[in-house]
Image (tube, rainbow, N blue to C red; front, side, top):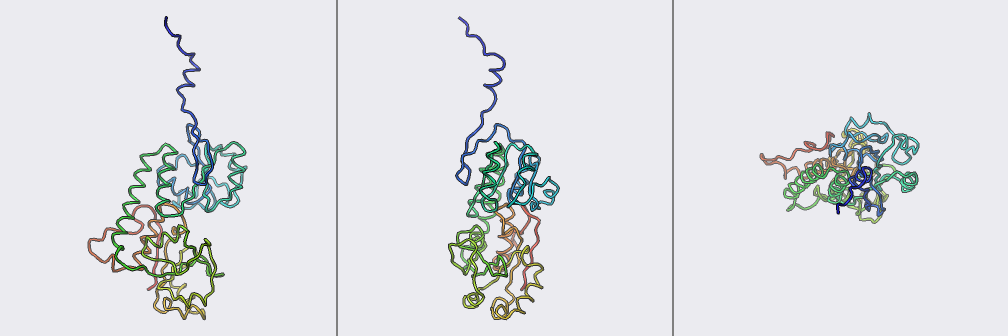
Length: 312
Protein backbone atom coordinates (compact mmCIF):
# COMPACT_ATOMS: atom_id res chain seq x y z
CA UNK A 1 0.00 0.00 0.00
CA UNK A 2 1.50 3.33 -1.04
CA UNK A 3 2.11 6.01 1.59
CA UNK A 4 0.29 9.21 0.77
CA UNK A 5 2.47 12.21 0.10
CA UNK A 6 2.47 15.11 2.53
CA UNK A 7 0.29 18.07 1.56
CA UNK A 8 2.18 20.84 -0.26
CA UNK A 9 2.02 23.25 2.70
CA UNK A 10 3.37 20.52 5.01
CA UNK A 11 6.24 19.77 2.61
CA UNK A 12 7.14 23.46 2.53
CA UNK A 13 7.05 23.63 6.31
CA UNK A 14 9.27 20.55 6.61
CA UNK A 15 11.81 22.00 4.19
CA UNK A 16 12.03 25.37 5.93
CA UNK A 17 14.99 25.68 8.36
CA UNK A 18 14.01 25.83 11.99
CA UNK A 19 15.00 28.68 14.31
CA UNK A 20 18.10 28.07 16.41
CA UNK A 21 18.39 28.63 20.13
CA UNK A 22 21.88 29.74 21.14
CA UNK A 23 23.51 31.13 24.26
CA UNK A 24 25.19 34.47 23.64
CA UNK A 25 28.33 35.75 25.35
CA UNK A 26 26.29 37.41 28.09
CA UNK A 27 24.77 34.04 29.01
CA UNK A 28 21.34 34.75 27.47
CA UNK A 29 19.38 32.21 25.46
CA UNK A 30 18.55 33.76 22.10
CA UNK A 31 16.31 32.37 19.38
CA UNK A 32 17.87 33.12 16.02
CA UNK A 33 15.49 33.12 13.03
CA UNK A 34 16.26 30.77 10.11
CA UNK A 35 17.27 33.70 7.92
CA UNK A 36 19.01 36.79 9.23
CA UNK A 37 18.89 39.38 6.47
CA UNK A 38 18.28 42.59 8.41
CA UNK A 39 20.66 43.44 11.26
CA UNK A 40 20.93 46.45 13.55
CA UNK A 41 24.25 47.00 15.35
CA UNK A 42 24.28 48.86 18.67
CA UNK A 43 28.07 49.10 19.01
CA UNK A 44 30.87 50.53 16.84
CA UNK A 45 32.99 47.38 17.24
CA UNK A 46 30.16 45.17 15.98
CA UNK A 47 29.53 47.44 13.01
CA UNK A 48 33.21 47.28 12.11
CA UNK A 49 33.13 43.50 12.45
CA UNK A 50 30.16 43.24 10.08
CA UNK A 51 32.15 45.09 7.43
CA UNK A 52 35.24 42.96 8.06
CA UNK A 53 33.10 39.87 7.46
CA UNK A 54 31.69 41.36 4.26
CA UNK A 55 28.17 41.39 5.69
CA UNK A 56 27.55 45.13 5.49
CA UNK A 57 24.73 44.52 3.01
CA UNK A 58 22.67 43.02 5.82
CA UNK A 59 23.35 45.94 8.15
CA UNK A 60 20.24 48.12 8.03
CA UNK A 61 21.10 50.36 10.96
CA UNK A 62 23.79 51.30 13.47
CA UNK A 63 24.61 54.00 16.01
CA UNK A 64 25.70 57.61 15.82
CA UNK A 65 29.21 56.53 16.83
CA UNK A 66 29.70 53.82 14.20
CA UNK A 67 32.39 55.45 12.06
CA UNK A 68 34.64 52.61 10.93
CA UNK A 69 34.78 52.16 8.02
CA UNK A 70 33.60 55.52 6.77
CA UNK A 71 30.72 53.87 4.90
CA UNK A 72 29.15 52.98 8.24
CA UNK A 73 28.42 56.65 8.84
CA UNK A 74 25.76 56.70 6.12
CA UNK A 75 23.74 53.80 7.51
CA UNK A 76 20.48 54.76 9.24
CA UNK A 77 21.28 55.63 12.86
CA UNK A 78 19.30 54.59 15.93
CA UNK A 79 20.97 56.93 18.42
CA UNK A 80 23.93 56.42 20.73
CA UNK A 81 25.08 53.03 22.08
CA UNK A 82 24.05 53.99 25.62
CA UNK A 83 20.62 55.36 24.74
CA UNK A 84 19.43 54.08 21.35
CA UNK A 85 15.90 54.78 20.23
CA UNK A 86 13.85 51.62 20.58
CA UNK A 87 11.30 53.10 18.17
CA UNK A 88 13.99 53.65 15.53
CA UNK A 89 15.22 50.08 15.95
CA UNK A 90 11.73 48.63 15.56
CA UNK A 91 11.10 50.79 12.49
CA UNK A 92 14.02 49.10 10.72
CA UNK A 93 12.34 45.67 11.09
CA UNK A 94 15.53 43.80 12.08
CA UNK A 95 15.75 40.04 12.17
CA UNK A 96 18.51 40.39 14.75
CA UNK A 97 20.04 43.12 16.90
CA UNK A 98 23.72 42.92 17.86
CA UNK A 99 24.82 44.37 21.19
CA UNK A 100 28.05 44.56 23.17
CA UNK A 101 28.16 44.18 26.94
CA UNK A 102 31.11 46.58 27.05
CA UNK A 103 29.07 49.57 25.82
CA UNK A 104 25.34 48.75 25.77
CA UNK A 105 23.06 48.66 28.81
CA UNK A 106 21.49 45.34 29.74
CA UNK A 107 18.13 47.08 30.04
CA UNK A 108 18.35 48.06 26.36
CA UNK A 109 18.66 44.43 25.32
CA UNK A 110 15.80 43.53 27.66
CA UNK A 111 13.53 46.19 26.16
CA UNK A 112 14.22 45.06 22.60
CA UNK A 113 13.81 41.37 23.44
CA UNK A 114 10.44 42.04 25.07
CA UNK A 115 9.23 43.28 21.69
CA UNK A 116 10.03 39.91 20.14
CA UNK A 117 13.27 41.01 18.43
CA UNK A 118 16.21 38.71 19.21
CA UNK A 119 19.31 40.37 20.65
CA UNK A 120 22.72 38.67 20.53
CA UNK A 121 25.30 40.18 22.90
CA UNK A 122 29.08 39.81 22.65
CA UNK A 123 31.43 40.13 25.62
CA UNK A 124 35.10 39.38 24.88
CA UNK A 125 37.65 40.00 27.64
CA UNK A 126 40.89 39.13 25.80
CA UNK A 127 42.31 39.65 22.34
CA UNK A 128 42.10 35.93 21.54
CA UNK A 129 38.58 35.89 22.94
CA UNK A 130 37.71 38.79 20.67
CA UNK A 131 39.00 36.97 17.59
CA UNK A 132 37.11 33.81 18.58
CA UNK A 133 33.99 35.94 19.00
CA UNK A 134 34.27 37.02 15.36
CA UNK A 135 34.15 33.38 14.32
CA UNK A 136 31.11 32.62 16.46
CA UNK A 137 29.27 35.66 15.12
CA UNK A 138 30.06 34.66 11.54
CA UNK A 139 28.77 31.13 12.17
CA UNK A 140 25.61 32.57 13.67
CA UNK A 141 25.01 34.65 10.55
CA UNK A 142 25.69 31.83 8.11
CA UNK A 143 29.05 33.26 7.08
CA UNK A 144 31.35 30.57 8.43
CA UNK A 145 33.78 30.76 5.51
CA UNK A 146 34.26 34.52 5.87
CA UNK A 147 34.61 34.13 9.62
CA UNK A 148 37.23 31.42 9.33
CA UNK A 149 39.25 33.55 6.91
CA UNK A 150 39.12 36.62 9.18
CA UNK A 151 40.02 34.61 12.28
CA UNK A 152 42.95 32.93 10.50
CA UNK A 153 44.27 36.24 9.19
CA UNK A 154 44.13 37.97 12.56
CA UNK A 155 45.60 35.01 14.45
CA UNK A 156 48.46 34.86 11.96
CA UNK A 157 49.26 38.51 12.61
CA UNK A 158 49.19 37.92 16.37
CA UNK A 159 51.53 34.95 16.04
CA UNK A 160 53.95 36.98 13.92
CA UNK A 161 53.89 39.73 16.51
CA UNK A 162 54.50 37.27 19.34
CA UNK A 163 57.50 35.85 17.48
CA UNK A 164 59.01 39.34 17.23
CA UNK A 165 58.54 40.24 20.89
CA UNK A 166 58.70 36.96 22.80
CA UNK A 167 62.28 37.42 24.04
CA UNK A 168 61.97 41.11 24.94
CA UNK A 169 61.15 42.41 28.43
CA UNK A 170 57.80 44.21 28.51
CA UNK A 171 57.73 47.98 28.66
CA UNK A 172 55.96 49.38 31.71
CA UNK A 173 53.35 51.84 30.52
CA UNK A 174 50.60 54.11 31.75
CA UNK A 175 47.60 53.81 29.47
CA UNK A 176 45.59 57.02 29.78
CA UNK A 177 41.86 56.65 29.28
CA UNK A 178 41.18 60.20 30.48
CA UNK A 179 43.58 62.92 31.63
CA UNK A 180 41.16 64.65 34.00
CA UNK A 181 40.37 62.88 36.20
CA UNK A 182 43.34 60.65 35.46
CA UNK A 183 41.85 57.29 34.55
CA UNK A 184 43.61 54.16 33.38
CA UNK A 185 42.78 50.49 32.77
CA UNK A 186 42.35 47.51 35.04
CA UNK A 187 44.22 44.27 34.53
CA UNK A 188 41.16 42.33 33.36
CA UNK A 189 40.19 44.59 30.45
CA UNK A 190 40.77 43.66 26.82
CA UNK A 191 42.96 46.79 26.54
CA UNK A 192 45.31 45.40 29.20
CA UNK A 193 45.55 42.20 27.19
CA UNK A 194 46.17 44.24 24.03
CA UNK A 195 49.10 45.91 25.80
CA UNK A 196 50.56 42.51 26.59
CA UNK A 197 50.40 41.52 22.92
CA UNK A 198 52.24 44.76 22.07
CA UNK A 199 55.06 43.90 24.49
CA UNK A 200 53.87 46.14 27.30
CA UNK A 201 52.23 45.90 30.68
CA UNK A 202 50.33 48.44 32.70
CA UNK A 203 51.99 49.92 35.76
CA UNK A 204 48.60 49.73 37.52
CA UNK A 205 47.23 46.46 38.88
CA UNK A 206 43.56 46.87 39.65
CA UNK A 207 40.47 44.68 39.54
CA UNK A 208 38.44 47.75 38.59
CA UNK A 209 38.04 48.16 34.84
CA UNK A 210 38.69 51.92 34.82
CA UNK A 211 40.55 52.88 38.01
CA UNK A 212 41.51 56.46 38.81
CA UNK A 213 44.89 57.31 40.23
CA UNK A 214 46.82 60.34 41.39
CA UNK A 215 49.67 61.97 39.54
CA UNK A 216 51.81 61.47 42.63
CA UNK A 217 51.35 57.72 42.23
CA UNK A 218 52.32 57.92 38.55
CA UNK A 219 55.47 59.85 39.46
CA UNK A 220 56.31 57.19 42.02
CA UNK A 221 55.81 54.37 39.51
CA UNK A 222 57.70 56.13 36.66
CA UNK A 223 56.33 54.35 33.55
CA UNK A 224 58.62 53.74 30.58
CA UNK A 225 55.95 55.04 28.21
CA UNK A 226 52.71 56.96 28.41
CA UNK A 227 50.17 55.61 25.93
CA UNK A 228 47.15 57.58 24.73
CA UNK A 229 44.54 56.87 22.10
CA UNK A 230 44.27 59.60 19.47
CA UNK A 231 40.55 60.03 20.14
CA UNK A 232 41.40 61.12 23.67
CA UNK A 233 44.64 62.99 23.20
CA UNK A 234 44.47 65.03 20.04
CA UNK A 235 47.61 65.73 18.01
CA UNK A 236 50.75 64.15 19.45
CA UNK A 237 53.18 67.05 19.75
CA UNK A 238 50.59 69.26 21.40
CA UNK A 239 49.94 66.49 23.92
CA UNK A 240 53.63 66.24 24.80
CA UNK A 241 53.90 70.02 25.20
CA UNK A 242 50.80 69.98 27.35
CA UNK A 243 52.20 67.29 29.60
CA UNK A 244 55.49 69.13 29.92
CA UNK A 245 53.61 72.22 31.04
CA UNK A 246 51.95 70.36 33.92
CA UNK A 247 53.80 70.38 37.23
CA UNK A 248 53.60 66.68 38.06
CA UNK A 249 53.72 65.36 34.51
CA UNK A 250 56.95 67.14 33.62
CA UNK A 251 58.71 65.20 36.38
CA UNK A 252 58.05 61.90 34.60
CA UNK A 253 61.04 60.39 32.81
CA UNK A 254 58.72 59.25 30.02
CA UNK A 255 57.75 62.88 29.34
CA UNK A 256 61.35 64.11 29.61
CA UNK A 257 62.51 61.40 27.20
CA UNK A 258 59.58 62.00 24.82
CA UNK A 259 58.25 58.49 25.36
CA UNK A 260 54.64 59.37 24.67
CA UNK A 261 52.97 56.95 22.26
CA UNK A 262 49.81 57.96 20.42
CA UNK A 263 47.92 55.00 18.99
CA UNK A 264 44.78 54.62 16.95
CA UNK A 265 41.47 54.88 18.78
CA UNK A 266 40.94 51.28 17.66
CA UNK A 267 42.81 50.34 20.83
CA UNK A 268 39.53 51.11 22.64
CA UNK A 269 37.40 48.71 20.57
CA UNK A 270 37.19 44.91 20.54
CA UNK A 271 37.06 45.02 16.74
CA UNK A 272 39.35 43.79 13.93
CA UNK A 273 41.16 47.14 13.89
CA UNK A 274 42.43 46.44 17.41
CA UNK A 275 45.12 44.24 15.86
CA UNK A 276 46.32 47.27 13.87
CA UNK A 277 46.51 49.33 17.04
CA UNK A 278 48.47 46.59 18.82
CA UNK A 279 50.97 46.50 15.96
CA UNK A 280 51.23 50.31 15.98
CA UNK A 281 52.04 50.33 19.68
CA UNK A 282 54.54 47.48 19.39
CA UNK A 283 56.42 49.37 16.66
CA UNK A 284 56.58 52.48 18.83
CA UNK A 285 57.79 50.96 22.09
CA UNK A 286 59.97 48.21 20.58
CA UNK A 287 61.31 49.77 17.36
CA UNK A 288 64.42 47.60 17.27
CA UNK A 289 62.29 44.46 16.97
CA UNK A 290 61.03 45.72 13.62
CA UNK A 291 64.21 47.15 12.19
CA UNK A 292 65.05 44.11 10.03
CA UNK A 293 64.81 44.63 6.27
CA UNK A 294 62.53 41.62 5.93
CA UNK A 295 59.89 43.27 8.13
CA UNK A 296 56.51 42.51 6.60
CA UNK A 297 54.35 43.80 9.41
CA UNK A 298 52.89 47.13 8.41
CA UNK A 299 50.37 48.54 10.90
CA UNK A 300 46.99 49.14 9.37
CA UNK A 301 47.66 47.16 6.21
CA UNK A 302 44.70 44.84 6.52
CA UNK A 303 41.87 45.70 8.88
CA UNK A 304 41.95 49.43 9.60
CA UNK A 305 42.80 52.74 7.99
CA UNK A 306 43.51 54.56 11.22
CA UNK A 307 46.63 56.66 11.52
CA UNK A 308 49.00 56.81 14.46
CA UNK A 309 51.76 59.06 15.72
CA UNK A 310 54.56 58.58 18.18
CA UNK A 311 56.37 61.41 19.92
CA UNK A 312 59.98 60.57 20.43
